[in-house]
Image 1: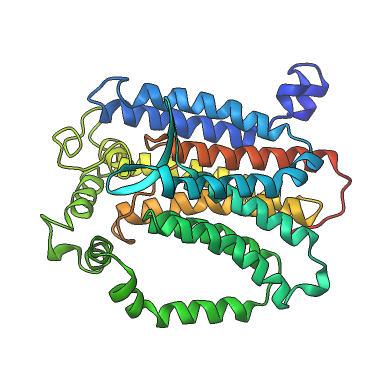
Image 2: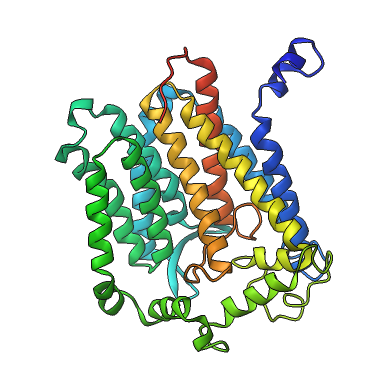
Amino acid sequence: MNTIAARGIVPEPIARQPWEMLIPLLLITGFGGLVLYSAGGGSMQPFAMSHFIRFLVFSVMAAIIASMPRDAVRVLTYPAYLAVLVMLLGVEIVGQVGGGSQRWLEAGPIRIQPSEIMKPAVVLAMARFYETLPAGMIGSWRSLVPSGMLIVLPISLVLLQPDLGTSVAIAFGGVVVMFLAGLPLWWFLLAGGTGIAAMPLIYFFALRPYQQARVTTFLDPENDPLGAGYHIAQSKIAIGSGGLFGKGFNNGTQSHLNYLPEPHTDFVFASMAEEWGLVGGLFVLTMYALILRWGWKVANESQDRFCALLAAGATATIFFYIAINLLMVMGMAPAKGIPLPWMSHGGSSMMTNMICIGLLMMVNRWNRMAPRRGLTV
């Protein structure tokens, strides 16, 4: 593309954009709009139109993030983290309740879920912390305790909402940054072993009844196919009935006859697989693979620790959404409200993932401007 630009065929500002990510992103978003059109009964309302509008709005936001200078980002990182933390505290005080959880702040027509913004905010704060930490302190308590607090503080507030899935997502992004920063491997193995050993205590004393039901349904989904296991059972039926090429666009029965719950949000992949079959599923996975590959490439090409950790953490956050949703709809993970990026209908998840795309584009731009030194993660 740069060679074409040099010949004057394509303007340089257009040619220098990361089209290896933007093309898959546009394709998966457009395909998601088709699935939502079908889920809406063959109409742009109420899902497809708002899906495209949100994508356009958050694309502008991503472009603004991508244009930010490095020094400004470094200065604003901790204030931004603190601002989101205050918003999470505000949720506990004046937040709006929906679906049995208190997760949103509302101001007129604007409705914000601060816990979603905290996912990239934690990654940004963690990357900034490890950039300033002297290399000799990696492996000491000074590399663990302050960064651990950056994760624990928002998780504590999110668990009060309650929202276990978002808490795990915040922790995942932060832990990935800690791992890539070079903290000793045995720390992670010890933490993982402790977590596994504590699972019975967590199940019986920390989880609420509906969360326990999700775990038992995951372990034995056939035990209550008309109750707690209904969502997963119908999702599997929808995916399996699609076969190789699917039933055809706008011809799904599981979603159109209301057998499949939430065909436009959590189970949008099942809705897609019923109509587009294995071929549609492979297309979706390929687009995601291309986006994630580009994100990891940006991290590998970064010329300093801050950029490398920020890009890797943003990529990991997108990966978490994709992996958990796909595992969930196939019955390989407990059912949880984790939307599928750029396909599910939902403003909060679209915002979070576009923030991550904006951060990756920002680091990619910095990489092009930086002298080459070969630092990788």
